Image (tube, rainbow, N blue to C red; front, side, top):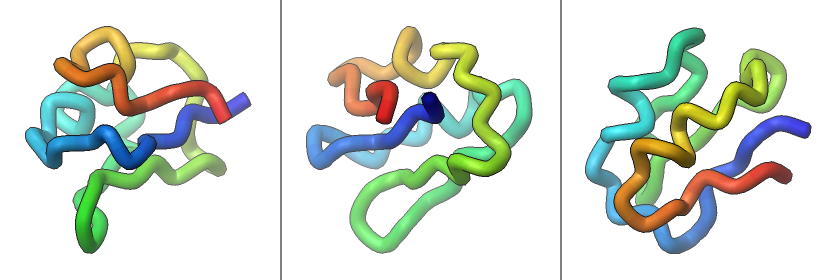
Length: 56
């Protein structure tokens, strides 16, 4: 299951900087993950200060 960034996102960009496949980008209010490109590695969740990325 791909990861999805929830409403807890504070738009710090830590997840995007660490994503090995660069599937995370800034959305209108929060960062978003392209589910088709996500390899489910969990790096985004491990670097997020508020644990906003969760498996969908």
